[in-house]
Length: 225
Image (cartoon, rainbow, N blue to C red; front, side):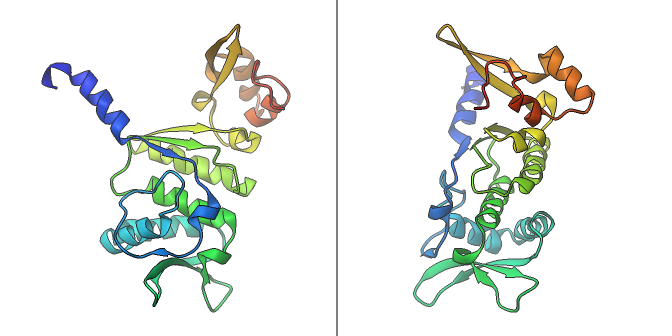
């Protein structure tokens, strides 16, 4: 591969990228505690195992994840992977307003999903490319801005994040030069870049938000309905 460095780099990118299509119902509940998982699966069904791996082998990273959760999700004061007597593993979430913690089965969808995304984004061996499918599903709209910041921080640390979304709230949280949209014309799909659209750029310069502009039809060819 020394002769084909570009091809080798592209191969490594493809082999190490990660697609996230998170499903709350698969992530909840206790899991078989046997073994370790290094990376979050596509659906997030191994969240407990990955959290335990980070908790035991990378405690500084786990503490950082919990610290970010405290900032992003009000009320959270502690998170721990907890083994059960029957050889299962679950997640324990401590809310500062309560004496006893809640297991993951009983916390909100948004709490579980935000924690899962942080586990993905703070992976000790981060993926060069993350592809995230509609992160707005089961997530409180107010958290979408927080999540957009986390995606941006991941990119600033050297990774790349590709997010598909149909949420005006998420679109409001990102920057003009981060947005592309697809338009199908005469049987072909074309990629449009928001920054290159003069009308959009002018509106944003005046203080408008992209989510609202999309709903008003200014992303030509991308019907919000």
